[in-house]
Amino acid sequence: TTEPMPMSPKALAQVCAAACRTPSIGLCNRTKRHGCRVSNPSFVAFTSRYVRCSKRLRAVNMTAESPPPVYALDFDGVICDSCGESSAAGWLAAVKQWPEHFSGATEQERAIVMEQMRVVRPVVETGFENVLLVRLLLDALRSGQSERVIETLMESWGTRLCEEYTNSVEWGSLGREYLIDFFGDVRDTWMNEDLDAWLGENSLYGEVAEALNNIAAPDDMFIVTTKQGRFASALLNRLGDVDVPEDSDRMYALGSGPKIETLKLIQEQYPGRALVFVEDRLATLQKVINTPGLERWNLFLVDWGYNTPAERDLARTDPACAARITVVDLPTFYTLLKTPSDLGLM
Image 1: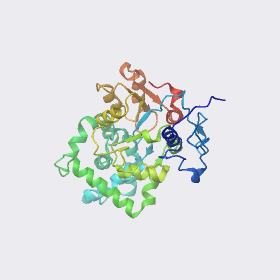
Image 2 (image 1 turned 135 degrees about the vertical axis):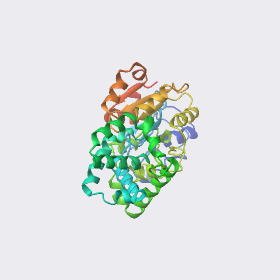
Image 3 (image 1 turned 180 degrees about the horizontal axis):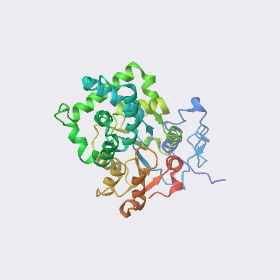
Image 4 (image 1 turned 90 degrees about the horizontal axis):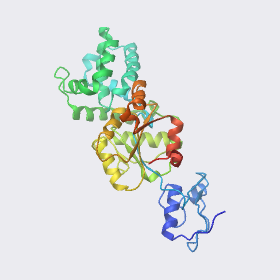
């Protein structure tokens, strides 16, 4: 049992909102949906230290616990396995961009390239790169150079080759902005013509949807991704029943600027709160480490998604990385979202 604790109407409304993930004025506005109960909701004397929600099966401690963290979550490779969709969309886009080059491609060639795209997926930072990689892998397959080309891509794609092929005169001097828009248009067409097929090429990892729907601070969760916002929003909604609209201030997608700048913006809004950034790209986390002013962020590298064993080993053993980065598995990720106090965040 606990001692009664008086609470103002405003405070009660805030607690109810925290428990039920939606704004609340007075009584919980989810009562009719799932039977949320507020003890003694008279606003005269709130006599319990807890607001309980029967759907969430959890309690919000009003005195002992610190505020939950603020979350910045990458999307592809952390929340969603989109490799199948991005590879297939890359193939569709490449066929449309270079029809003569792909006109003789066989189903067997396509199947092999799709398998190889999963191997090289860790080098992809922005979706349009899939269009270029599909053509490179098809050319390598036809010339019998697949193994050598894949090795080269894994070593040099992000540092040199991506820009080189983006602006290749031989390939049409397409440029980054054109490829971003073009790839987005191809995805839009696929979604509009066969939404079920498009969705079917994506999946959320493990029990991520359940964890997101029970996150400790739902209104303080931000999606920080290089994916176009409309696609990330649609997948969250359709596959996970998680509502983060494209135009929400919680969606930082392609066009929002570098992730480093996004993290700076977020931390300015939350002085004194613990900050959590979860990524599947080690290079992105290293940028955070090397950026002055971002020392408050707790950094997590997932051991699934689109990174390699060598990158995970580096995160664990390199002194600069190991001092800031924690490599996490899916169960620990669920704990991080739902009961972060168990992990002792700074």
